[in-house]
Image (spheres, one colour):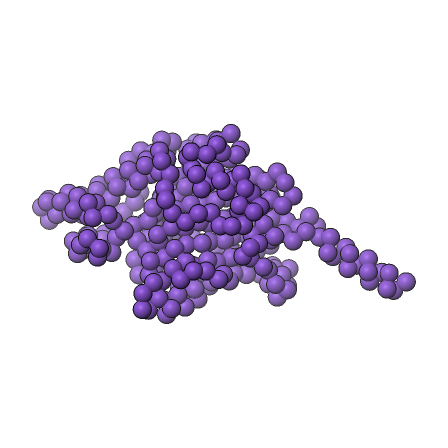
Length: 325
């Protein structure tokens, strides 16, 4: 009798779906992480990755569903609010120059642009962009150069956003787990904007965020998808880097509401980024420092996201999203 009960318990336990199976490979959540999640803690760790790639996964238990995450995603500035996000704004559909009015640059940016040379520049710029920006900025009198820098970089970011919407971009492909577990979404993202999309909502936003010595200014394409199959998250927010002015050469982020089917709901987050600073002679040391920092920051961000999501709906709607049937 006792043996039969034990066997029944084992069958019941194995029948509970793994809420994190969607991210496998490369994510495997061990017993220690699951115990911490059950206690309400946030967990985060780095994943094996190529030499210039930094990959991280984190999760936290939440009391919300996919509707709540999707609602907050539509107000991306409110969702991402934290000490690490200095400035952020959502682009109109189509993007307009005034969408970037809240983005600022400083004297250090001016100095870095002055020092730029082809193949040696603090900003990630093509050679012709370096020449054009320097002429636009340093062809002005000193008192107007910072204002000219604002105008020049805002124009550059707007063009990159427009070019992406028209023709997509080359860069890291979506991770393997997305092709395995949501192939239609993976193909849509990889071939954007050429491939027909699943039932998703999309928009672009820009942000200025802390990473390393200088803030990273970037443009991101967000796709909001709702799962229709048991192996898919209730809601999945995919962020694809369109461009970044420093450090990041390509990035994917995945924020999801997943559950085990047994009333256990989690907010899961995965980031996969190509970081230029991880190469070279000191790449190993830089990786060690960056990985230790992002693990610590990730748990803090997850805790903030949980508080925000569980507090209720977002502050207000936006109307800049595109619905892709």
